[in-house]
Length: 249
Image 1 (tube, rainbow, N blue to C red):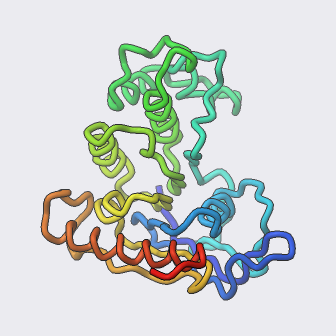
Image 2 (cartoon, one colour; image 1 turned 30 degrees about the vertical axis):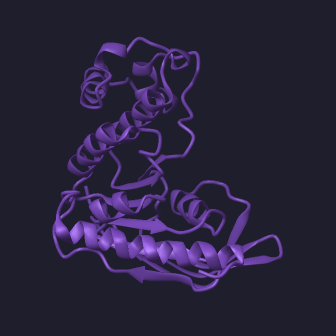
């Protein structure tokens, strides 16, 4: 499996409003790229463009993989909403992609992934009987089940308690090693734990690169490098949020 790099450039427009002028985003092959910034600046729109999903905005420019092949069929997506089918069990939801493609699901692999996210005992439960955090972990297992070279994660751990969040971050980092991952998060600690490269998007400066620790991810939360990078990122996010809201920081 070859995980391509992805490049976006141009202008992102919503209706008559320019969200991001002079957009230039490089997503490195086989690495984790993280997008941060205030709500409403276009992070999810960019993620949906990479995933080939419909969006209200349009990109006047280009989006392409560095191997020259189409991204269609090569991207797995985990959206903010878990998007589980309410009438299907957790197990059936994990392998729903195979069913929709007319393929025979690999139930054993689906169960292994549910075990990995700590929900093996709840494989037969329907989403209505699961907590929000449990539903998010089923959605993570479904994304991992797809086994694609490119993975888009939109706030994938936001509903989890801190201990479970760290465990799922580690699991995702291990199982998605070598994949091209684009992740959106609002959590500075999460970004600095997982990012090989990080970009800040805001309404005043557009999109610009952020420094990440010069250590392999996932990084220990207690390491001085992670702490320092997290603090610097939080200060920058605070300034960006203040400017976006039109107040002095």
